[in-house]
Image (tube, rainbow, N blue to C red; front, side, top):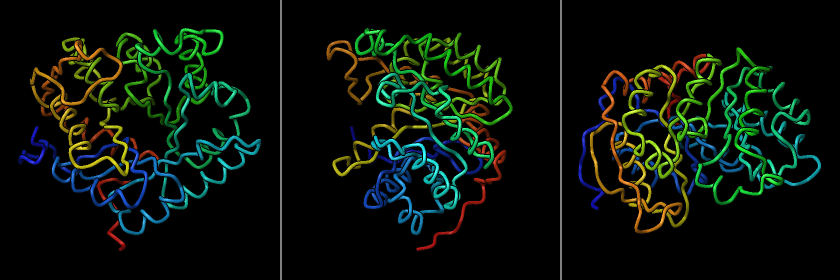
Length: 321
């Protein structure tokens, strides 16, 4: 597929904002933004390691908002203290959102559920600083039927979502971004329950292969869900940069998202899905969302979310380097 072919920008007034990426290093930035420009995507909320965020901010701070993240691999007994220091450092870079990764694998590695009292100092800090809480809860259904069948070790999806609802109730009134369509695009009824009961919750549409597979599999119901909840969903791609991820790799992900949300395309996806056998790869079925819904998905909803914490994404900082 020739990803360099010209294509029109999304039909959006204002910036197109991707609320969920992983721009991992300054050395990846120029190539990443070249792909983003080609696909008409202007501004990003990124999970960048603090050490790279410090230098990335000097040159590209006008195009990114940093999502505060811990040192994911810090296994020391002072992990919480280190996380608190990093929240402060990210806050000083302008960050007003912090991410908790609470997938089944992460819970096992941390040795604590996210609603465990050990994490209360982190939640109190975010509330005190008026920062958006962002979470990764759950994982694809395919993983629950493959990787997570040992319920004694990983628990069940129901237990994971009960953990999350415990926190949503406790921090009711505080803005909350749920990655990967709340971690359960396979169950739109569950997502509707969450949106109905927690008015401060927004879902992001991130993860290319997961969304292509599960949104396409229930195209009509998903389209109705997006239209019904058009004020509660924001765009995210979950792009992850890397030294070996060239223009075509990154472009293939943006291509899939734009086809999935904006068009009625039905056909092969260029991104191989490792969770599905090679001879059963999913068909991408675009939702062809109305222009008014795309305006909210790509721009209005995330701008409204960040304004709750004092950030105006319509007025990004000027380039500093």
